[in-house]
Amino acid sequence: MKKQVLILLLNVVLTGTLCAQKTVDLNTLHSISSNELMEFATELSSAKYEGRLSGTPEYLEAARWCASKFEEWGVKPANNGSYFQYFPNEYSEVNLLGSMVYFNGKEKIYLDFPEDYLPGSNSASGTVQAPLVYVGHGITAPELGYDDYENVDVEGKIIILESGTPYTKNDETLAKWTPYAYHRYKFRNAVKHGAAGMIYASKLANPNTVNLEGFVYAHVDIKVVTQIMADAGKDYQQIRQQLKNMETPSFELPAEQQVFIRAETKYFPDAQACNVVGMIEGSDPDLKDEVIIIGGHLDGQGQMGDVMFPSALDNASGISDILGAAKALANSEVKPKRSVLFILIGGEECGLYGSEYYCKNPLFPIEKTKMMINLDMVGNGTGFFVSGGKTHSALFGHFENANNYYIHREMGTSAVSKNYGRPRSDASHFENVGIKTFGLWTRNSVYPVHYHMPADKTNVLTPEIMEDAAKLLYLGVLGVANDSKL
Ligand SMILES: [Zn+2]
Image (cartoon, rainbow, N blue to C red; front, side):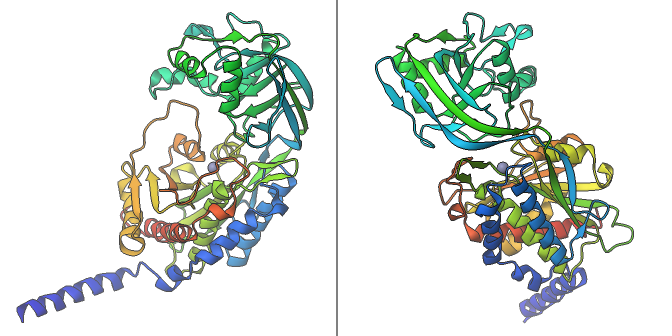
């Protein structure tokens, strides 16, 4: 009897507390559907947007489609009556897949797209054929006593280049190497040394480079590089180890080993792209000046010749999750007291242009921005990861509660750690101006991840986790927006 009374009392207390807070609108929560999120992802990955390369007319078309959804749901334009925040975004269009041939000294070997090579996203148009020079990371850093070009002559040759820097430990020393980690630096340094062309030893579509007049290049698979090295009597694994030991193992390959590259591109130096900005104004007269940002990049890898890179997981998935949360927050009976700003970011793949532009030209004061959560590749897996949760635990608690009470996914988190290397995510710009920032992605992939490849299609998305990601955003952001203790 006593026990029953106690349970009854406990129920009254709990129900009372929940009613008093009225933190969740279950109808809206359950209106978030995987079907609808997959429709968004399918739209964004469809042929008419040609892979959403930032700066292209097709990217701008995708941006307009997203803005039309905001308008339909009553999410307001956030930039003086406009949904768009424009910024400069040069880009190159790859018109043909081109071709690549390797002469091993005895025979011609025709390389296949996309198994063996990808055209350079910012290659110049034209052809190049020449002997090869291996230049490791392609770095000339006198103050670090390091020069990959010291003992080789690359004039008129095709260089074989590695990405990254020989020093990789994330500490203050890495900061000295970071200026040399940029593709743009490496390309310019190659041209400065007289290289006629380049094969990049990493096979990824990568718009984050630079278009240099007459400089033709392509990306090649590691197995091709390994073969070229073996034909020159070298062990590629051993060379990679020498790089790690900072031994600058650069060398000129035998003159009979040559590569031919044909590329056809068009360069648009004066193009513009945009962030899509929509907002839900806070319902509380005092708190509405404070803002919570939900962001993710809308742009993708674009198209090469007639082959599209749908960029479905990276990052149509994240944008679809954000759209799902935006619709729910706009319809929610429980209104956010603080304002919520959605930024569908442009130019990420070209070098984080859109997030950099926003942070230099914020639409709301940085000091009034309570937090930012960035979604990148949130659509393939069974679990979540939220970076920054251990550092910003009061904010993160709202996402943890949402997961514990309603979603029940495995969810990992980490503390914010200073990155001394090249910034690789839109979140870094927000973090660098002092905004408390989370990065959200999915883990425990269900399907293979075809990162920056034509196979990144909607059939690699797991609709269930996208639905849960949108629910996590809806509940977590609402929790933060209405937390009187912040
Ligand atoms: Zn991405």
